[in-house]
Image (tube, rainbow, N blue to C red; front, side, top):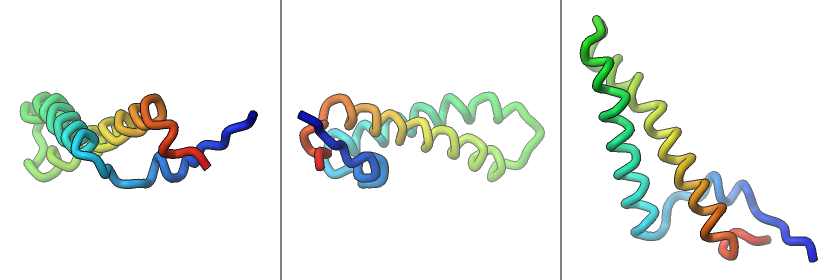
Length: 79
């Protein structure tokens, strides 16, 4: 039996459940602090440091949500 998974839905659908929203917020916050701390000692403007730290933190935290969806919520994303 072949099962097709809707990868576009897994990657592009916004978080619906409370667990996904909290996980996304916590991961993004922790990663932002982790990426921003070393930039505080660099000679760059505050806004440039915020943008530089926010891009990887958002992409990594969204990747974490996609990974959790693909592992634990396969039934919701079957075609």
